[in-house]
Amino acid sequence: MSNHPHSAASAAPSLTANIWDERRPLADARLREIISDARVVGVGESAHFVAELNVARASLVEALIRDAGVGSVALEIGRDEAPLVHQWLAGERPEELQALVGPLTAALYGTFLDELRQRLPQDHGIRVLGVDLPNSLSIEPSVAPLAGVLATIDPDASELVQATIELAAQVKGGSAAASATSWLALERDVQDSLTVHLARLRARVDALAAVHRTDEDAHLWREARDLAETAATTDVMLRAMADLFSGTGRVDDTTIREVYVAQRLGDAVHALADGERIAYVAHNNHIQKTPVVFDGVVTAYPAGSLLAGLLGAAYRAIALTHTDEQVPEMAFPASTDVGFRVERVDAAAIGEHSVEAGCGEVLQSAAATIVLWDAGSRTHITSIRSQSATTEVTAATFDVALVFASAATDAAIAALSLD
Image (cartoon, rainbow, N blue to C red):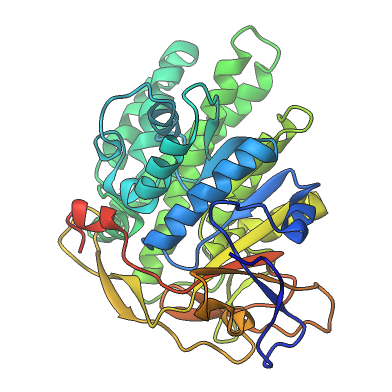
């Protein structure tokens, strides 16, 4: 395949588009230059459950591991699932991935992880970081291990812990949608009691962790603080999602989750060895470096924007999108473990000054295109596809984009009976 630059569409004259070869993901010199000083590389997707994007992300991450010093892969999963995914990726677990983790993680990352495991050598040593809240947005995955830690270091909290466990167990679901529905079904006093118990438990753990920060069990107190913070933040985020699904959500509420993710990634960066990097694999709306804007309304300040503020040029964001006429989309509600089904719907029209329009005619002769631009004012970009809609962006939102001609529904969706 040719790797010579082509002129981009006249709608966006400052963009350049080259054929992107999945077999040589980092062949483009400008792409290599863009990531050369990065400590964290965001690898996105414009829509979940797209086969081409999952395979391409595996190819790109494998190249980042092999040729660019990436030693950790951060995913949109919680600390409860990360050890299981780590063991599976290392070939230490013989089970199918969906048998180890919830159906949502298997749907989001199954094909990507399967492709990555096949590409990596057996002794790859790659770490998997769960930098997000529990994917199910249920509280039990954080409270249960917290109870185990506190049984050792703070037995006096047992009554508070037990009451919190009983309340948290009433929120059930395999996804944010399902858990939010479960939470909405609770009586108001139960909802509020859960929040109060989590706040009380978090405050106690924070206070005692400060007192015991030099003790021999200080590491257990640090773990307890992390778990208590995760449980309390999940509860607040669960309330935000419940408001969203009930039509009373507040603008920017989902930033709660984004700040949590950015803090976890920031902590991981501080622990990196010299020359080591992290690939943060998530939706475009999480990795992007500017606010998420739909129809002129800011809906969140994403983790990527916070990382860009923290790391500057040491954070780079690679968007993945497509020009297909249809795209997989989540249909709510549904009687599945995750509370939705995946349907093919019409994708939003490609905007005149969109990232997708920057491909020009290159996609007529290739399956994928790499679109590059300068972050200066002369580069005029206004939108990129997001799920079946579009979101407003600027030249500063991403550093580079990979654009694909098709967006087939991932085979994992049918295997999980979510279609």
